[in-house]
Length: 113
Image (cartoon, rainbow, N blue to C red):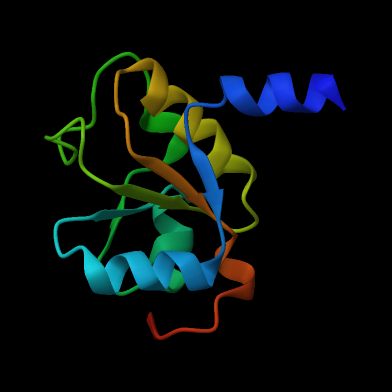
């Protein structure tokens, strides 16, 4: 149990549900919603207002679309794996309000196709 607590306390981002993400998007008009799937996946369907920044393009340089380090950033992919990778990368770059949302594969809201 203490190992889980230790690992959880070191995480620099939060994992949130779709419901929590939708609530955040309603309350905070300055959030950034980031789809970290490939451009092809993004074009096949994405959440309205999402910006496509593929996980593999996020490296040592800060993404130009993310200007404010303290802005709420909600990250998603297909299943959650790539979004958690991206969240770790963003945290290393100094971003502070990062949220990994459950994958789009189970998203119940509207999508742009």
